[in-house]
Length: 105
Image 1 (cartoon, rainbow, N blue to C red):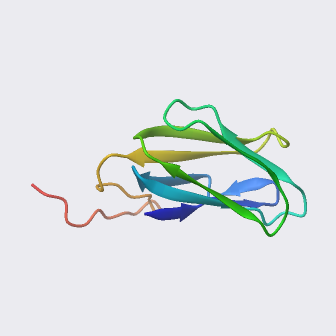
Image 2 (cartoon, rainbow, N blue to C red):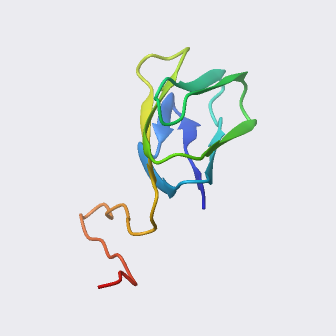
Image 3 (cartoon, rainbow, N blue to C red):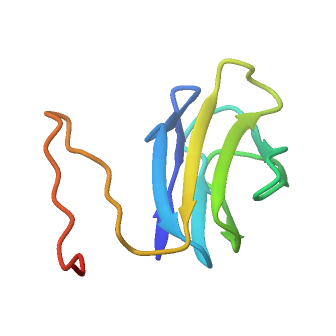
């Protein structure tokens, strides 16, 4: 899988992504300011360093768990990545509806 968490208006958008272990998450910067995306989570510690508008960096998440994402330069910015070791998950729509197709008995 591949997902993205965009840095936009000094926020991470979306706030939550869900992927399977071994997936890549991109972190494009659409703000006019630099950001430094990082996590100290046991399931996926990383630090992407500072980078400007128009650049994107990525990280592969190999272990299942919850990754809490922050910006060193903007303390109000936070996001979460939920890494699963199975494909049976989804994120609900804005109205709360969801479907998980092809779930075995």
